[in-house]
Image (cartoon, rainbow, N blue to C red; front, side, top):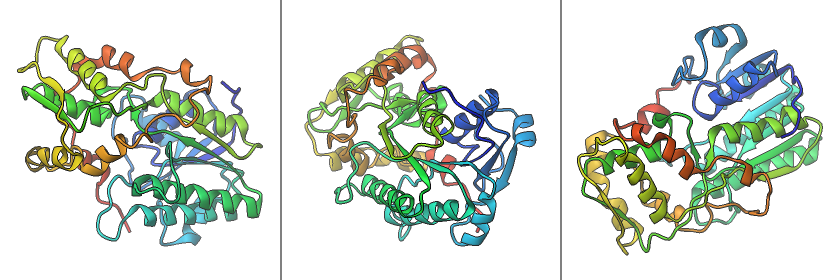
Amino acid sequence: MIPSVNAGRVAITGALSFTGRYLAAHLLERNLVSSIVNLSSRTTPISSHNISPEQVESSMHQAELSFHDPARLTSSLEGVDVLYCTYWIRFSRGDDNHFEAAKRCRTLFECAQQAGVQKVVFTAHTGMSLDSPYQYIAGKAHASQYLREICAKTGMNYAIAKPCGIFGDVPCESILFNNAAYVMRRTPLFLLPKDGRAKFQPIYVKDLVQLMVDLGNGSIHTTGEELDAVGKDAPMALDLFRTLRDSCLSDKRPIFRSAVAASHLPTKVVGAMTKPLDWYTGDILLDSDDLDLMYSGLTVADDPMDERIAQRKGILEWMAENGSHLGLEYVNSMDRYYYPRKD
C-alpha cells in the first residue's frame, strides 16, 4: 500500500454508483480530498451502505457527464487534480456499443487534459487487446490506448487498473452472484456451459478502491502504471458456483439444494436457457457474450506473480461470509445501471 496524499479536488465518474461510491467514501473518510466532483446524472446513492447524505451534501459537487458538450465537461473538471474514470457500459444497445463508449472516454480524457488534470486513473480489463473478438474488452483496450496516446502527447499522467469482475461489499451489490444464488434457491439444477472449467478472478470492491487510490492520490506524479485488479482466488466455474450453492445452504432457507453441473452445452444454448428468467424479471441475468468471455481465459490475472494479489480478499472467502444473505431477492441490473439519464 502506497501512502496516500491529499490530492485536493478529484473527479469520479459515478461517485454515487458502485465502485465510484466506495472510492468516494474511502477518500472522504481518510480526508484525502477537499472535495469530489460527481460526474454523473445520478444525484442520490444507489445504496446508503457506506456514504451518508451529509457527506454527499457537504463534499460533493454534481456535474453532468456531458460527452456531447466538451466545453461544459472541461469546465466541470477545472481545478481537479485526479480523475478516476470507471465509466463503461455493460451491453451494446443499437448504436450504443463498446467502441462508442471508448470514444466517449477519449472525449473525457481530452477534456481532463485541457482542464489541467494531473492524472487519470482508468479501470479497464484483464486480457484486453485492440483486436479482441470480445467487444466488451476490445472497447476497453481502445479506451486505454486513447488514454496512453493523449498522455504521451500532452504530458498528463495516467494509470490503468485491470479488473475482470468486482464483488462485495454487501450481497445486493454483487449482482452476478446474488442473482445466481437467487436461481439456486429456486431451481433444482444450475447448469454451466461446456466443461465448467473456466476460471474467474474477480476483486473485492474495497481492494479495487485501494489500488485505485494508490495509483491516483498515492502516485499522482508518476505515469504509465498498468496493474491487474484481481483477488487472490481464481476458481474454476464449477468450484465457484458450488461454493456459492453451499454458502447459501448455511441459512436453512433454500427451497432446493440446487445441483451445479457442467452441461457440456455451448454458451449460446445455456444463455438461451436463462431467457425465461430474463422475461420474468425484465433483466438480463447472463448473455452468451458474458459466458464466452468467462470461457476465454481472459478473466484471470495477466501477471499472476504480482505480490499484491495474495494480500487481497478472495471471492470464496467472501461467499462463505455472505452466503446466507445472497439470493433472497433478485436485483435488477437494468434498473440499477440503465436509469434515465439527462441529455
